[in-house]
Length: 229
Image 1 (cartoon, rainbow, N blue to C red):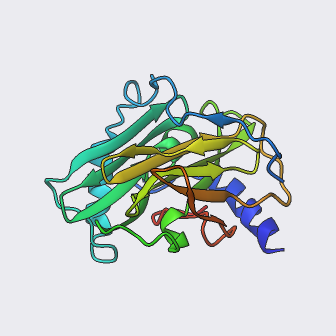
Image 2: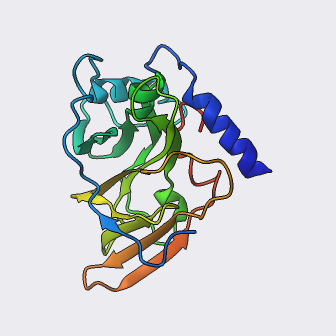
Image 3: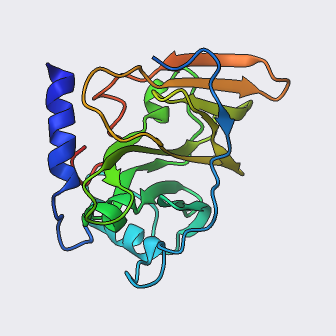
């Protein structure tokens, strides 16, 4: 029942206009890169300045989720056909944003809860939560697709973070220094109903598995803090 309600909420959000800030996996999954061709939609007719909008969101939510200061720089970024994701950091704190909800749903840029730049334990599964929404491939289109993005600080001793999504596709996060970033959009249209859990695997430099776990739907699949899922 909870999952059905969650799916219904996702569809409502997909068609909503946000505030003024805008604001069973397969046995042999396919491994692909997180980095697609540069998106022509990320900057252009929509005039989207993701870094600037992310800074504005950080300021708005600073009392609840203290984030990096105004001098924060972009330390990691992915641009693809399905939108852009980035991480801002100032040496002490970090925040991450994504613009797919803005570009395709007419909503706002999505903000992941900012935090201190501190390597999480490999057992701290919340640190690997994803943001999940349904979006069309073109603004206003009726067909929707599941989309995910995630960001974080790299745990000590970990050199690869691998996600396996409900469609069976496996992706490695893009690691930049002490940070990591990931996007995925499913190729098949969204269908309501039960879905496999997202699996996360953390690897050491020697290739050994440090930890693996599954994310809990509704609890670890809505990592953004400024709009619904």
